[in-house]
Amino acid sequence: MSAELIANVVIAGILTGLVYGLMALGLSVIFGVVRVVNFAHGEMMTVAMYAATVLFAELGLDPFLAILPDLHPTRHPSCHPCSSSSLFIGPI
Image (tube, rainbow, N blue to C red; front, side, top):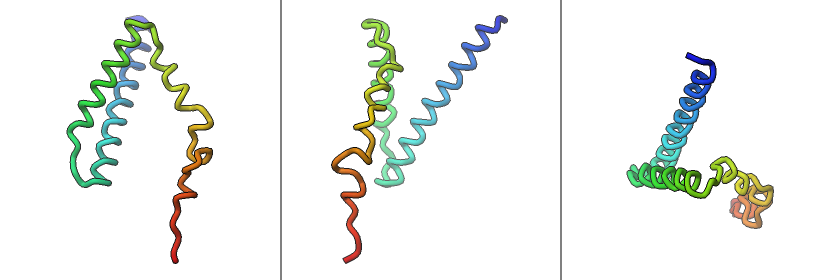
C-alpha cells in the first residue's frame, strides 16, 4: 500500500465523518427546537450532495469554492442589519 492511497482513504474517511456529523447536528437542532423528527432532512442532504457532485462533474465547479460566498464578511451576523442584537426584546 502506498502512502498516497493511505492518505486518500484517511481524508475520505474524515470527510465522510464530517458529513455524518453535520447531518446529526442538523437533526438534533431541528428536534430540539420543534420536537418533531424531520425525516426530510436526510433527503435534502442527499439531493444537495448529488447536486454538488453533478456540478463538479459536468461544470468542473470545485465544491470548496462554493464555501467562499458564505465566508464573505457581510454575511456575518454582526454585520447584518437584522443582527440578533437588534432583535433583542428586553424586560419591560
